[in-house]
Amino acid sequence: MANVVILGAGFAGQTAALYLRKKLTKDHQVTVINPWPRFTYIPSLVWVGVGQMQPEKTMFELAPILKKKGIKFIQAWAREIHPDEQYVVTESKDGTKQTVNYDYLINATGPHLNFEGTEGLGPDNGYSHSICNIHHAKMARDAYLDKVERMKKGEHVNILIGTGHGQATCQGAALEYITNIHSDLVKRGLRDKAKIMWISNEPALGDLGVGGIHAQKYGYVMKSEAFLKSLFAEQGIYFQVQTAVKKVEQGKVTWENYEGEEGETEFDFAMLIPQFLGTKIKYINKNGEDITSNLQTLEALCW
Image (cartoon, rainbow, N blue to C red; front, side, top):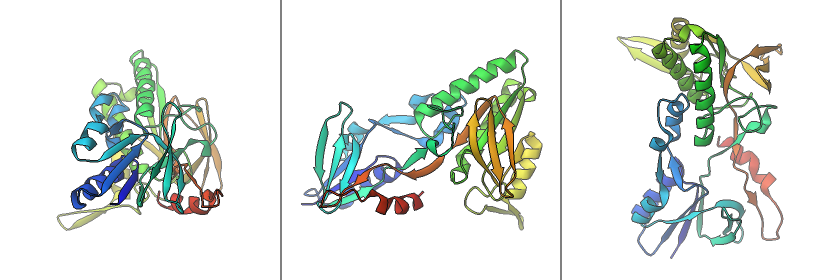
């Protein structure tokens, strides 16, 4: 009998677990380790972050679903991977540590949100917001709705959306979020009270970290750069690309562009996507030596 252990229960982890359970015979065991008891549909957080979707609508409990499929579920953090001896050290919420042996291991933990990579970035220890997890999306929602109340009183606010690091790679989520904010303010009759700005490390507007996309209709091909320039002009959204945010302070960001020019942009509300890195799990060899640094570069390339 083989035990396949999967770290993480997001899209990749669940897909792997469900397909393996379907393909493997019952004498093989599939185990999922995840620190959170619920699955969150991350793409819907762009709606949670503007108050247009309730957080509970994006989640479901993992344990009953996995149990029904014959998959073992352990709610815990994976702290160490011992690849030579083939086991994982986990830590539960109460601090209890456990050793989980495996024959095959799939690391699907997702990214570490590297807020610390930019000074002052992030909602927990900084001055900006994020929609990369449910906790942060709710904080972004509350901060955004606070600005909505200010606009209702006649105040004008500056809203800054985009990437908060020169190597951030999730421009698509930020783009969805900025258009949701525009649409929400239009519906509320408050669009004229907000200056909405896009700041991104993309080489061109609409690059989205994938070199841009193309759409064809009636024999005409339009690049995403041209489409977004037209859309932003129509919606009155200012944009600045080829720019890395270097520092976030209360009410302003300091940035540097591709040409080495530096500047500042003021904001009342900012949602800036951090850099994604490999999840911080230690790798220990058979001699008890920490070999994490040998694998971190490989992990980071995955994101």
